[in-house]
Length: 285
Image (cartoon, rainbow, N blue to C red; front, side, top):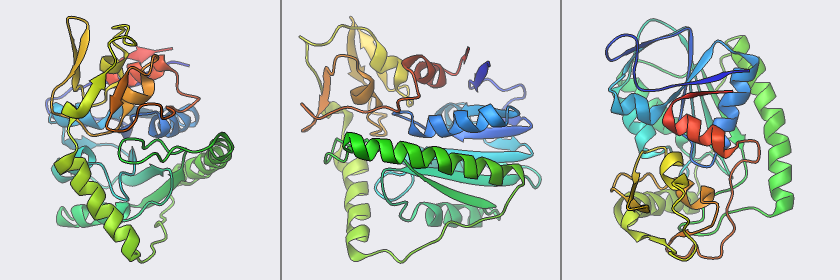
């Protein structure tokens, strides 16, 4: 089966017109895996990078079904996803759904989206959460044990099948919300401050003895933030802290803060080829 990732060149200027669309942001492949599973069962969907759409200013969208798949960052949505939501203009009355992947709790993710959409007189028809293996290692190591990974992978496969059945029939469903604890509130606030005020891609370090100048980090970065200069990766201050470069580096030559020696992760069903194709917006078998 051929899988198509749409790049940032639409058929009409600043407008995307397709039958069904999945807008994706993914670093280690958890969210990309969800999108590909949906496309396998519902081939009418086209997968579009949220970053590519944002950079191309493709904010006017017309389709029968529109989905958004992305990871949860510190119990909320990534900044690039929030920026895209604030800019998009959905035409007509399509079925709109969101799938948030997370290593643990979903937090205020759907509340944030609802608040944004209310301002443009829109709302989500369906909200889904998928628990996947943890991949956060920059601030603290939140990766799972092998047993925990296997359990989450098994349950996530079942969950994705449930979501596909729900999407097929345009089911309207809200994610169950719970009042945030004080600890969750502090984690969310401190996490955002760290992510967008303290964290800097200038903190990335490359082990010159381990680096083979292969360019993997450049090709998997969903933000197009890494360039090789004289064979060496350089970061260009447009980082979303997805840690794709750390996790996908085949030689573990990239570190940030206290990540040296910490185990790396990417979704076992997402190959490097698939991740590169998604980041580059090209077709592949």
